[in-house]
Amino acid sequence: MNKQISNNSLLVPSDFIIIGGGGDLSLRKIMPALFWIFLDNQINKESRIIICLRQKSNIEEYSSKLLPYCKEAIENKTINKKKWSEFKSLIQIVVLDVVSGEGLNNLSLLVNNKCNLKRPCIFYLSIASSLIGDACNVIKKGSLNFPQSRLVIEKPIGHNKSSAIIINKKLYDIFEEHQIYRIDHYLGKETVQNLMALRFANTFFENQWDNKNIDNVQITVAETIGVEDRIGYYNEYGAIKDMLQNHLLQLICLVAMEPPSYFDVDQVRDEKLRVLKALKPLKETEIQIGQYQGYESELGKRSNTETFVSLEVCIENWRWAGVPFYIRTGKKMPSRASEIVITFKKKPHDIFSKLKENQAEDLPNRLIIRVQPQEGLKLQLISKAPGAGEIKFFPSELNLSFSDSFSYRLPDAYERLLMDVVMGNQTLFMRSDEVLAAWDYIDPIVKMVKNNPPELYVPGTSGPKDNILLHNGHVWIDPKDDLK
Ligand code: BG6
Image (cartoon, rainbow, N blue to C red):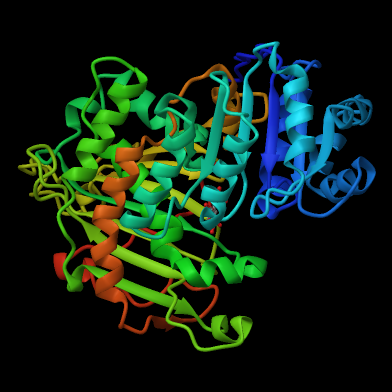
């Protein structure tokens, strides 16, 4: 079955102002996402992309740096070469130093030149969180915080709760909450949004979605890459602040939240917040941290920064009491795979217990939600093997692969989220209280593991030997490459 469902719509003319436009995130994610949206004819040709760089540059120099990241899109169709030139004509370069404010006049002139058109002015701060305050000062000084301005910032917001509060104050100094878009790109991933559809657009799963029916939940976000040229940033943060505080906690929220009354921006965020507030403080025996061998030589010094973390999360409410949520993420794992595995409880009574061969029949039902790659869902069931004689069972699967079901490319998370910013839809962005509640959970964890050296693991393996699930008689379900 191959479906053609598309919701392409032309966005209103907008100004995208990317502060830190020459950085890794901008080149690898933001600009290619804008180019894909442009190829889908969703970016209005009246729009402008203003790239703020610290060093003087020009369009040709900048676009040659960007080219490798847009190559796949350019080569997708012959016409895209022409479109690449059209896209380049939307780009303008401005030199701006957010710390000294140098270059602000030029940016103001450029932006003000069209601001009377009341078009959305989207400031994307693609910079370290320590520079957010400076960037806000610059926007304020240049009086660029128009009512139609929007601000996009990246995770992690601060490095603990108190620094996040300071950043929030800075943001509120110039913007109101409805103008602030705190990106967690995991919320823009197709399967992550599908989790809400799966739960709340069907009755089938939601009726089973509690501690009476679910035995445990596992969430794995595994990457094959190491820290590469982001090691300076990464060594300050580690897996707990880089991945757990945001992406993984958000995934937990979507699995565990109560159904909101409506799919409305604040109702969804209120429900996620309730989950964050119900997280039980972690004990030392419920967390393991690891570091891949060779990390310290990449860094050139000793370090206790974790590149792997696994933990048992408990949610203290009626729906989830007693259901462990096992969470893990790591770099240099055997394969790149993000999966949510819901293991259902075993049946209360086995009517087949007197059969001689009923081994497979004892396996629990599992719902596997593959976030990436090969996005899809798989439901593991027990079926009867065909044939006469004594009934025999075998494990079977219902497989729904999104890439097979839809004939077009699934958009990258940044494409979806950037479009939401232009359309003024904050549902998939974190509200300030969510960020603070996430830090409430994470700060004590960071403190707890601070003096524990991480266990070393061999690159290409699944991290240190498990010491958490073992105590509950569970094992990690490793992602398999079979959702095709
Ligand atoms: C980022 C982290 O937010 O997410 C990176 O800072 C990580 O360390 C990345 O590699 C993973 O994103 P994705 O979309 O490739 O799973």
